[in-house]
Length: 308
Image (tube, rainbow, N blue to C red; front, side):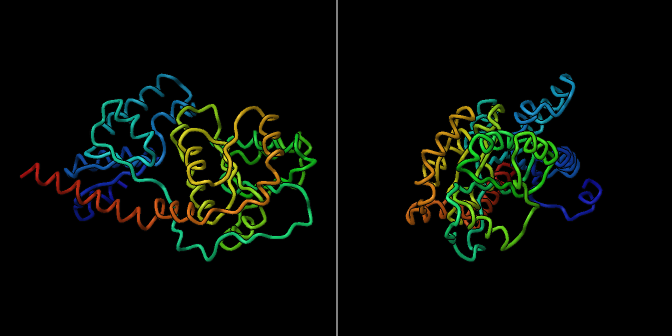
């Protein structure tokens, strides 16, 4: 990135998008050398997520990384987050120029909304489709399915760093035919049509996930899927605010009991057209892009006025 950027035409603003942490470092160095205002875009809750995940093995190295991230954030002319909660966290830590541009989805790309299929099975069809990583806490979803096999049918579609461990866990629990390789395009929509409810999950033991909203939530909601949220904080609030499904918490047995009690309502659920219209208007990616552009042009104008 650095050599390419050194010889590129000089931009008005330089945007460094994270979670790729090396991008943050490269952006900082390039902005200093080329004297270009730096905009730091935090797509995840860094550095809090670094502390929660423990991906840096040594504590002294973790502290250095956290300090470096905070220092670069503080040096930026503007920091952009995707949730209000993360923005407020950064403001509380002393950053002044922080704005929010939410994640969203390009709803115009969806050919239609969810098509309900008649079921031969009376079991509740539960789907997780997406990345099988450390953040999603999918072992809990497997545990819930294991105690609910009499009335629940689970499919997990995708792959990721936790795939092997999850498959081993499923085998230990006696779950079969759970995992499906990744799919694309129309095949994704067919799985959404198959499901009675789609799981959006984040592990509950990482504090930073209280102000993290999985991007998959916007796609599912925009297609008209019922969402079961194994999430907390802002993600749970969005599900409740726009009547997108249910948020569940508690131990495995408590969640299983809640889903069983709600299974009939889940199967019969249909999205509310008014809530859907409002949701799409707020989180449409094209509208968000226009707002983002206006934010950046306004920020650049302020910088130029200051220099003048």
